Length: 403
Ligand SMILES: [Zn+2]
Image (spheres, rainbow, N blue to C red):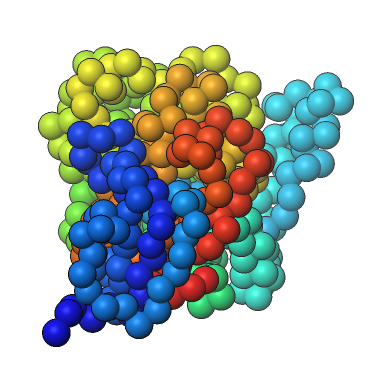
């Protein structure tokens, strides 16, 4: 009896994104078989001897893993288009902030929003990502900064997978900004994060990870360390926004807590890069925020390469610094702005992004992994990084099902 499979996808070229010697993990004239939502065979079409219930002819197109967007803040209310317009009309950032703008306005709007309206807006943004081949999305809280709204945001984030062919990873980002009611009392707010909100989020299993904004305008090292220590106690994974605007050595602190990832990193020093490697921490680069804020200091890509630190790329989709619901655009930015090769960029939205979420069942086309895959009508995988808004998947499978 030949081995039985649910589906055979044949006549495709594969960019499997496994760590093979071949760039892109390329396999020409390949076949992929799926059983019970998992990839069960990968290899040359000629080598396939099993029997599949269904056969799909890929007509020579390229099959890639579904993309993983490993850093977003896509649950929020309100729009900051008015501020954008004010800034371009010459109003200073300080003045906008005095008028209640910036993150304060997003927090105010998100606190007032109902579950249903937050869900409706978030679904629209997540749909844009899914249309471009994203099948796993990380979503952070951090626009409530109180108990009720943070929980609401995480519940909205988790709910999105009921409506779209995506898996969602959730992150509690209480230490995102100081809420008005804690003005000048950052230590008290961190106590609230650690002693009130995090225990409840852990109890309700609403988050996989905990994140912080470690920055002179965010939280200092001691405050971040307290959040990490508490998170570890609850068995939550660690992530950090670090070295975006200055070098506080937040990435080093997080890596020493075995952080899954440290994100932004424009100001990361070369000495700290080796600490990332020692702790298997992924460097997540966010070219959308760099672009939108018109930054000039680039992350230390050469040092990350030299130390073999895995680099991931993400949209950072958020209303303030990266209102960009397009992983394909971000992929192009990563090459144009940061000089990453198309191969590095594709690793950054597949295998390395999955590692940044601690999801070893995602991010490549290999036996045993979830069958999240997209078919693209392209001549070569580099086309997905080279062009802007030129391609959409022609077929998609999520956990082995046509999506
Ligand atoms: Zn972010």
